Image (cartoon, rainbow, N blue to C red):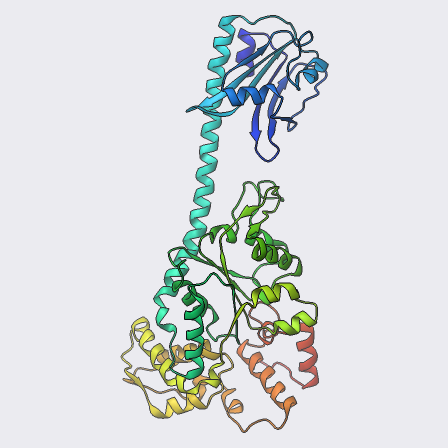
Length: 477
């Protein structure tokens, strides 16, 4: 483009600037020059107030200073004089009455430009404006495509959970108390903290609270705080600006912005890094988030529902969880009972899963035999409702009869030890709890689904307890 301009009008400096709202000024994106000394380099910012670019941007009209050395008008003119320029022409880059930037043409000589040259530069500015408009449109399409892809993941998950809305199954007093609390808090904007062992249905209760709330027409966005490395969880929650870190090619909304107007479910909140906890506290207090690399806070309207299987008060004492954040989250606590404390719900849940998997697995099973139900009730269910669902699915895969039988081997080799007489002391209880968790996790100690996370203790502590109790992984032979 600059080569074409040279054929018509002599110039020593040509540049394109665009308005930067955060800096409230104009940033030089493209510079072409024949000058030996260049004061205003690429990425330099000229303030909007008091500048020729600000005047052109506001009035959407060109501006000419025919003699910079004798009559500098705007604040950037003295820099142009330092570069040796005598005349400056600023033209708005207009598309649909919207100024996308400024074309700046500087010449060494002074004096009024030829009217034909001005007409030519006006046409050049129009072509540049259309080019910028097309680039911005493509970038916007990319951003929207990215956002739609992410939202599609959340909405697909939401549909899956809506289909499982009937999974709030149970008639026991303990479970009905939980459902009652969820219904009471749902219409309010109050933050909720759901606690309970792994597999008790914390996410289903969170979804129910969202579905019963005035926010139900907006999505409930989910974040597993233990699933992201410490360096990525902030970007995932709060988003980032373009150039915030290596690979950040464009700005990206975080989960808080995606959940605007709806709910954000923070699962495994106890695994959140301390530095991220401080930022979460600010959101709960002020309703403002800071994108990584951003200069201006973004206001969000989000209802936070958190969940954990860890002992957060103990984590606060150990310095692993912020006390102020705990009190902010613990406004309305809901504690889910383990399945072993609601044995009357086990037959109801078992039959519920039977009906689900009859369709999924194309089985003809109509009911579960009484002996199998009694066996299920005697079992202690360390994996809670999730484990019960897995057992029913496994039994139905193996069964081709109209009445489902669940043999001892379907429950697992650990079942007999779990249904023995009560432990003699607390040490024995602890040993059995660790053993059943290790068996459930296939002896995986670390990782988001490992035994250490399920037990709520560091992997090093778990290894120490295993050594203390003489536990070793059995050989595969």
